[in-house]
Amino acid sequence: MALFSGGYFFAYSNDRRRTTSFKIPHSLSYSKRSRSLYLSFAFHRKAGTRYITMSDKSKNCGAVGAEMKAGERDQPQLHRQLQTDLARETVEEHQLLHSTPLPSSSTAFSDSRASYESGLRVAYQGIRGANGELAAEEAYPNCEKIACRHFHATFEAVESRVADRAIIPIENSLGGSIHGNYDLLLRHDLHIVGELLLAVSHCLLADHGVKLQDLNTVLSHPQALAQCEKTLRKLGLVGEAVSNTAVAAKQVTVQKLRDKGALASSSAAQIYGLNILAPNMQDDCNNVTRFLVLAREPLAPSTDGPFKTSIVFSLKDGPAVLSDALSVFNSNQIELLKIESRPLKNQPMQASKKNNKTIGCFNYLFYVDVEASMADPRAQIALTHLQELSTFLRVLGCYPMDASRVYD
Image (cartoon, rainbow, N blue to C red; front, side, top):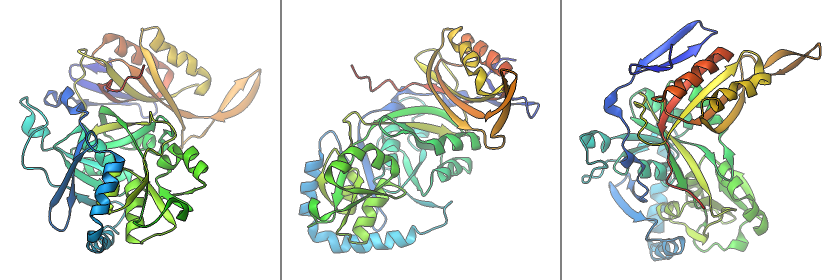
């Protein structure tokens, strides 16, 4: 049976001896406008439903720092508000932190789905000022943003219909893959419906009056610390991991830290009233994070433009036959874009014979991205052949490629 036929996707599992299928709602077909690259965002303040809007195209780190100096007189009030917010956000790990209300004007789409798309609720991990929030706003400029404490909570928000979409980082050009999110893709029954390549710029933030020589530690998310590792080492600063870049900025403000700074965005500096000691802290100026957009239902695939299909599978004979498995794509003129392996947790070891000897090796799940649409018969043929070699095969999503950032 084909993996895509008559509006259905199929996920095979030889272990369970069953095939699951689900109908594709054609009303959810993709619009290229959802990949708008215009950086504009609104941040909600709980106390007075007040918005601060800005654009990275018109303001740089230095300009934001100058604006912060003008707002120093508001620091005590801001500090009290952040302390209140922090207490409210000390919740159970599955609980949502907050959401931003929709702007009253403008829509993200001009076609017949405008009213639906402009009202999308998009879950992201972190708090106000996090890169996840910027990615949500860039993918859906008029969305309602829902902040979640952990990545798994973004999945649960969509599954429970609290949110319509989740947007999660999956890999970075400097820090590499985010392995925990690969595990979550398999653990949950959501579908990848889009991707977004977001240029990320980290700023070194500190409380007002603190100088660079006063710092000895920098707080941030582990990925951000990895992306700025060389720069921090040159400055003689030690990284300390926290759950999110914006959380790091908020912690510096709330606790009035004088010997610790934060790696976060320029918007986080504005929100939490911090001074920017140094912009562009990342080790490479081409620092790009790839985000995935997740939904309860898959997209209807198309051959109108470049599509990407993401799959996960395990092999009957283990990693020794991986080259045979991947050859199904080459024989069908399908380009392999990415492969990621994760140990199979329930069956971590497998016996394999080599030179008349039995040896033990890891069992793996392989996550693969290919440049192909499930509407293309060649993709169906390739995956049908791959299924013959697999104990498990699942299509995670078929979605348009984000080709917005191409470097010469």
